[in-house]
Image: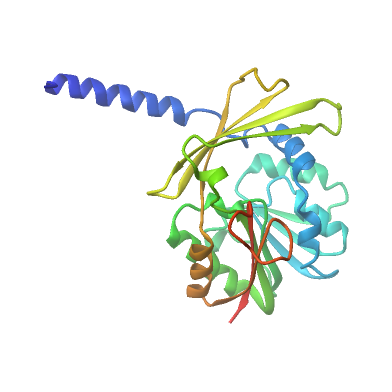
Length: 269
């Protein structure tokens, strides 16, 4: 039987290990590297363009370094992007050479940190798994309530996130993506290790960016919430939205089990 002293040692060691893990770098710390990867492997911009007409006023929540915002702005939309990362927004402004987008630093789960605007938005969008960074249901509902208060009566809320598939949520699940870098022509290997906690819906994900698939490198971490289709739709409906369409894998076909991505189009009731 363990003594009280032994239990104290176990608790101290466990806390120390947790502290070490919590200090692993985030995948967003290296903005340049993250942007290089996303620019190369993401192909969702044309999907967002289907829902945004030239001249529409669009607000992107969690705009990051501006990949989607700049794409829509170049096609005639009037775009504002909000993100809580000053580093990401610095990269966005660097890329926005013609000042096409209004960039705003703030936490979009807090109403007072949203950009101030005299009129309403035609579209509020959350691309690239932004919604997965909201871990609590009450925060999610708060975002929808704020969004509805700023949305034009005929406007839309558009969300994408990854779907809870076995590839993502099985114990020890991992994914290896291979891609050729657009600038240097090198073939890179992006290895993801997933650790899913079904009791909380939280998945910790470790990224390793390798030149050779068998050569481990220091990992970068992020904690994401895996929202189910039902959870997202019910939270939108509870806030006063009508879910118009649920699609999968950056297409307009109806979402089906096994689709890796979940795309939701909601409007005001």
